[in-house]
Image (cartoon, rainbow, N blue to C red; front, top):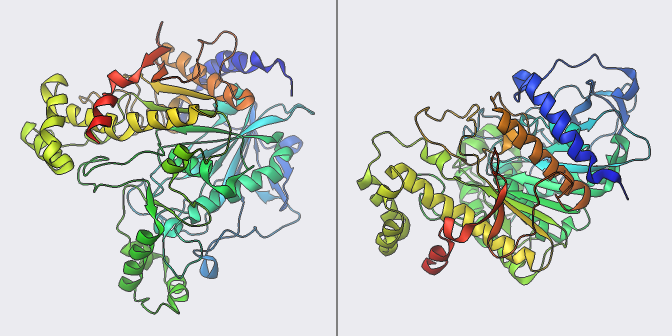
Length: 534
């Protein structure tokens, strides 16, 4: 649809968002009190029945809308089924659903399996005949923990003039268990995301959204999932643009690569290996008979299942099944992915989030020990390229190794493969004074642009305090993300030009004059070194 939108999201993002941020802050604690729910606009009819949300002066929210039946009892470890229909009165959609079952790796553990719900935020007033892009958010947490409603997207919805949907999906063992007795096992979380996208296709118009213009975006584990959906045959036609934040299809990590103590791994696991792990878990749970294993597993209390789970930092997604036939990095290399524009990026200092929690006594000897356990006979080579003396401390040197080896260079590999066939816009979030929010990062640790540091610039997820320059950057990022959703191109009049990705040049996003500029990452993150080492 032609639209003089090239300037409108810019105007809304730069004026409205900056004003909202300046007056009410950027955390859930600073969100203005909601106006009383009004009859006009508070009730929306979905395909399953009417929902009553909350009407704010500039936006509407609808929370806890079921997009699939509760995956409990006989529906545990099955493909998501349609939700039960209802009629009048409208379903209360003023409060979010409880988080999906997860261990203590997140903020709060949970045993709740009835969690397939989503939240919709729309700008006001809705303009008839002008359907808005829909942006569907997959939260991070390594597919092990997290919750959709922790991300308040109203600044993105208002400033970008878009409809934003945040989705909860099965996590950990409940979403990604592999076992030969379970059909299409190891991919239930991905199937949940696809069910949510189908719900969006059916219901977007009722909320003022355009079902023919859907952007799927996610960060960290959610970014990995966007990669998976890009290559999943079953996601064909369910979305039209993709944004991948700090989650690479090509990512792998050595021992200690994600955080000290974490074993070597990848976001992806082959079906045979996943099913072998599943059989071991089933045996520990007393479900050893192959003929009855599925029924046995479904009868177990959620607490028993979760207790036996190892509690990984990141739960791998199984490939080699109908949902994800191929390993995503190999699919990208072969060109087996859905053709659409992609916006992709990372933070400047990804690894500093985990390094921040190293003991203050962490010294050079311990740094060299971790490198030895991670890289074996190549440890001296890595230590020579990343000497602690060049980074100010052994902890910061380890963080640089993690940033470059696990995050920046693999994502750069993805961007090259994608850019050979589709438009790609690549970035590096580089505000090295980004606020910590609720992360318990020690005050004296230079966290820099740590993993997830960009999220408060797009969402209200926790109370943070921004400088005027950071508020300006947040408004600009809203313009870029929403502009990409509108047009498949983040550029608009008045914004610093964002060139398409080429070679290793990406757009650096930092506050202040000259903070938004092209940079080359191969030297900054030693990507040539890592390519040669592997």
